[in-house]
Length: 428
Image (tube, rainbow, N blue to C red; front, side, top):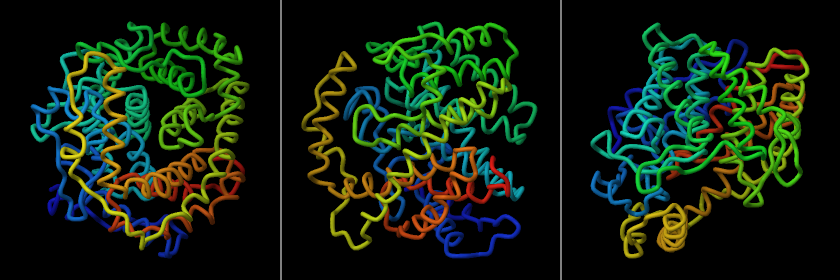
């Protein structure tokens, strides 16, 4: 149980000057409180799901080492810690930047510390873990590109906020260098533990991978001054490939695309936030404009999915079960390859859904539209964002956060704080 000690950390959000304490503010306060009471573990890392009282059935250290329920760590509570921390920290930093709230700063720092921990738990250099067991160290052997790019984004946001002390700045830069160097040395692939060794890549020439690779190269040059990273960035921009034989520069201008499902904003936003970072860091006017166009296109595509929130029904009778073991473990078998682990995990998910059909509701009607809302607000064109502001605010008030079992509503908090930062003019 994550429990009572975190409840004490739930403090009132301070609206930006000129914002009344309205229904949206109250809804976001409720969302914020639920995140910090139930979904942030003692190491400052988000867990995927919990009971309504904050109880979490963590995998044991022995299960992590054995790859149970699967070596990918899919569909149990510590599946997405690096991914979710790296994006949720944006909400706390947006709040701090607007209010200078000490509570927001402290919580952002806690999430940052969780990110550093996740890149310090393995003997494999550069591995960014998904989460930790009760011992604060045991983990699954494979991370992913989806975990690692938000890890970079979250630390970038913390450094850029000005909150980092001199010692924190040193620690963060050292860890960024360690992870980025390891990934680059593997041909832009994510390190993993034996027998898997690698899992996921930034090297592909399609939108998600291109945004991640360019962002990492850009931020590493920005924070280290190492010319090698500037050269890698310049070279990567015009490399061509993929189905359309497009350059990464062209892919950034085109914005977000969906590849393996009709929509998957919850993973796509892990690349769109990298594009936002590129736009913030870029000083070349032509490139910056291309990145702005890509963010505008991404926002327009994401806005099409905002109505998915209307599928949420607070009275939905579908049940949630945290007992992932009884559903998934009967299918377990040893795995030696990523492909074996993925096939096992997909079969286990089908079994888990039979005992916990509530997952369907929360992924379709909450995870997708709230991630889409955050993508919309990452767009620097304030006029585009304002077109959808009322819909996003309404979305925030739709959910009964105290009765949600998955943490994947956290994006709505960041989306609303970004709405509050909208300037009178055309960009933000």
